[in-house]
Image (cartoon, each protein chain N blue to C red):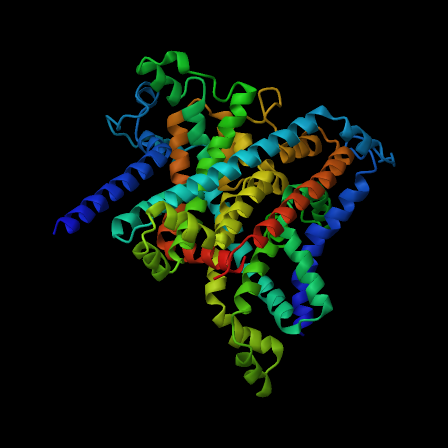
Length: 281
Length: 284
């Protein structure tokens, strides 16, 4: 009897400890959230207080900026993120399938080179990559940025995830289809690819998120004058309107809402994706 | 047919990684500059210059300090939070959801939040003032040494979201019967953690340490928002200096030699770390 009470008590203490730790850790997020709904005067005088009066002025200011920063940024980031994901999924799955099923000296070397790509900061290739894009006639364009994202930034990670996942698939599964006369490509498309769904979810979720949040690549590959993404747009605006904290909080909030919804909806896949990375790491 | 399809991906990688790397190796031996008409071959001049370049050395030192601080900080913090949040009720699930939020926000948003906290007339100093601790107020982003630690703190804070999730997963993969057997044998909570759980968390440790390290070695965004590399370029990181030389100062030739040196340093540091971490993993 006394033992049960003791464990309930310590269970409560533990939960309280956990709640206090997370509250302390989340304090910056609290600051960001409450200041969205305050006037600038209250932000400077009572930064930690709850909003009083509550205002949506910062959100309205953010949405009605004359440069349309939010709307243009949201549109461009959506296009670029979706295009990057839609392109990298089939490309990476094909490369991974080729590596796993062909298994010869060439695929081994290719995999090694691709994996070392994860250690390379994309920053070191920005300068020559701009020249390559100029040569191809797509410098400072969305297609140029998307192709750079796929080939230069994220392919190594995507192939890594797919190869790790494919190694866990039973081999006889698609061998059976081969006997039935399917080509390797048909098998990849109709048999293997549907089985890769968890890996595809990981690739899509993380590369979508990284592309959305990316600052340097749009800043240097696209150039701020050629079109802003939501992240590079905020960055540029920060330099210009640093004093209007209220409006900046409003813009940050609006720009983060899609990401937060995305995270809350796909939370399970987020964590299982991290896990699949760690178990095969 | 499969080979042809796969070569598409390899071609993209070649076009945007391998060819650019080869180009920057070559351009590193020239004085290429978009403001000059033609680039001249200058031999090892760029490499000689970078050996004596104090700004580059400082940027590398800053990167090393930030990487070490954030790797230790984010992994310790993540480990502690994971242990604290390792509960089964739904309250814990809500708390875990909150801890991961900084990780999904962009570095720009996170850094801006911290600008409002850490700037001279920011929230931290005004709170210190209002509770009579004015003497502790500091220009957290204005003094070079202090600013570097402020950047490290912000990066650590954001990365803790990630490390906590990884460590939680690792903790939960430790078999319960092992822990239960140890408990019956009289092992206390700390002993069970240090002798059983922690040694079995090897893979989680590898992934968490590696990702934090790779992320901080290429740190740019946080620095750009928090300090713009200042005051006086004193908080620049290696890639920040590289991009300033290449894109702001137009010294493409010199920047290319720096890019190549960074590639070697960052690549080998990451590769050595990964192989070290793998070796110490304990398998069940």
